[in-house]
Length: 143
Image: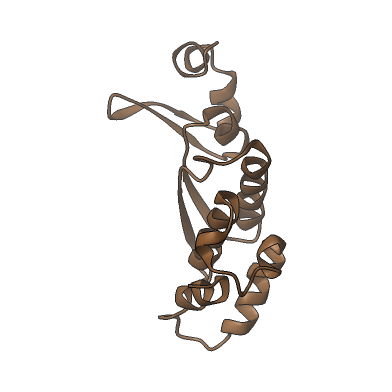
């Protein structure tokens, strides 16, 4: 499917008819997709595919966006873009639940963080406090 078809698919079960406006909002958020609207999603770069997946999910106007390892396999430049977009999405009113192995970057943007160890919550606090924690640094951040 093309970029446009993917976005339209994301709006398939939506109750309102503002699909065109919602697509334009996604293109405002992810301008790299706008010029590629007629391209097949399979030929996009990995970073662009991640943007498209997020855009497709946002077509539903969710209250909560679940982001599972959004930086996996991306170049450093795309990792930065994806994290910037997660911040923008959150500032626009959508809560974001982020699961990410790039702990430093995730904690830098997190309002609240939970550190898991062997399947259970090891620590929880603000992202800033967890980044400063000597225990977290030793155990998980290589400090």
